[in-house]
Image (cartoon, rainbow, N blue to C red; front, side, top):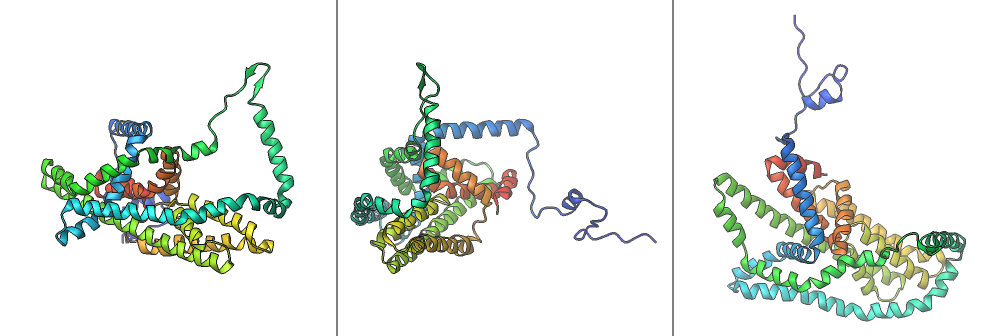
Length: 376
């Protein structure tokens, strides 16, 4: 009698190795990898050329990308106004004025408390030095080492050993300066994107030859707008919750200007990983200056970090799990890359751009393998 074959769902691990087991369990969807070396080579060259152009032309490309992402966020509001018989041009103007007016009013409201903290910081430096006196020895050693390293780059015997590069502060804010210089461009492009509505999508559908391609491009566009709008709205609401919880926590500790600290927590939470670290550092500095005893001065930063962990690791993933499941390693790499490319604005929009790339890859059969790689 011939032996009964094993079912495919339960391979014999004593005979087959990991590779054979993986082959015996096919993926749920067809995700073909490109096999033509010319296609891979040309695709890689195109990607490198696009990234190089984005870096060189950041003053133009960054405002356009920001305008496109803001259009995904604000377009549903324009559609809602159109349903109540408001002309599209007036609806676009009202939405833009409301959005940026809120930002300007928010900044004006916080300018006074921020100026007060900036003015009180020099008076708190002696107290800060006194409380951190236990760090004096390692800091002095680090300062001596940096001084010696800097001396190696100075002029020696009439010859310059190494050229002085840009400072860390200049590197950090270079993307922000590009964003400020292109603000008017972003505003202009955003207005015409909202005014045009789905014109570009309709024109693209008209020129595609097959009905299957027309339907696919419409599905991709609708899913991008729906998912990115839901993502940005959810993130904004979660950031508001983090800011409110941080403000209440600061008020409970008796620190000045809880609204300012809540706003700082709200804004910095838009930048993954880096933003919360900076906010925790600022809260540590404020606690060291204002709170006694020493252990209590670290409590605001620790509680803020706990709030951020609850929001970032439990609540937000639960709300977005059905729409976005991104590979955390890819998220870190995207954050680092776009921060290097465009500075702070690049770090803020790295997640929406990664989500858009995942949606497009998942909907196109030839790119489905890359979309699977981006999934969490």
